[in-house]
Amino acid sequence: MDPYVEFSRRTITLDREESEARVLAIASSIGGTNALDVILRGLPEYCVPTVIVQHMAAGLTKMLAEHLNSVSAMEVREASDGDMLRWGIALLAPADTHMRLRMKEGLMVECFAGKRIHGLMPAADVLFKSVAEIIKDKAIGVVLTGMGADGADGLLQMRRQGARTIAQDKESSVVYGMPKRAFGVGAAEYVLPLNLITQKIMALMYSFR
Image (cartoon, rainbow, N blue to C red; front, side, top):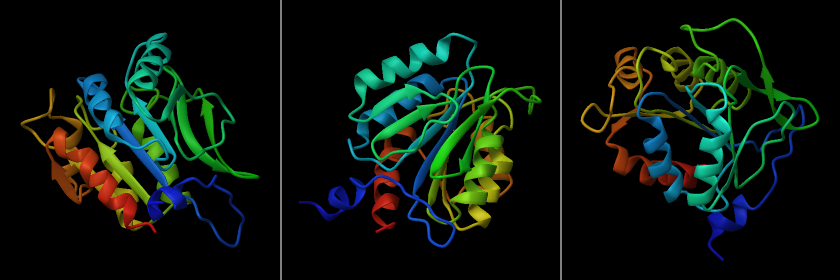
């Protein structure tokens, strides 16, 4: 068996001394539904635990999760408060709810109503900053097409902790706002067209072995 697949079958367990957690965190907004479709179609069934913020109106995130689940080898679902992170599962933040990582008996998501960041809830900065704090250098952060600046500060914190970071390029973005800001503040290690982002994610996941 491919050693990456064998490695990635394991469920995350965490203790306070040693963590084997790996996480892929993705943020997107305008144009992001198509971008997420492209990326998730290419990820393997036993992908590292994945958490996603897509800016959408209430009621639409569940529909998006169901669509992405239908096209992805992974299981994709709208997150609920307390969901554990697992290999092969992608959790999409519900509309009107922030999502962040929490370490209790294991690694889980906390979904909560709070102050809007950049006028948004969920906000990618909330998620990314929690990934930077807990997962540190065993994470991959991706900022895709979208308007505004959400995700840039959180992605920068991730990169400063040693995480690998990607921003979508201008030519393939529907709106070059979020990834432009991420590049501008130095948060993006790689700037790539949409059709090459999944390939780069896979290469970076192999480096976690």
